[in-house]
Length: 92
Image (cartoon, rainbow, N blue to C red; front, side, top):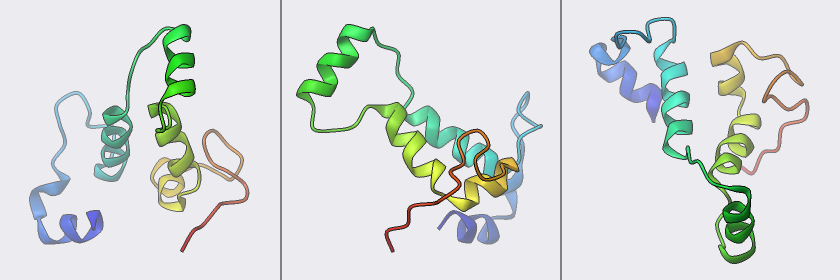
């Protein structure tokens, strides 16, 4: 969907001031991660793990992006490097 959007909207590749070193695809992933960005104490995080049915935000970012080859391509990650898994988990 994102790739179709960028193809249909020529202005989609405009860079934001101060963030010009990031490609539009990298900015897509950075924005995705920022959506789940939180700061909490260890005790609050433990309480959330024990009482909430949802994963903590950091795992909502690390899990999907570590299994997504497009993330690796966007940031030039090699398998096993950084957040990139050697063996990707695919659902579909």
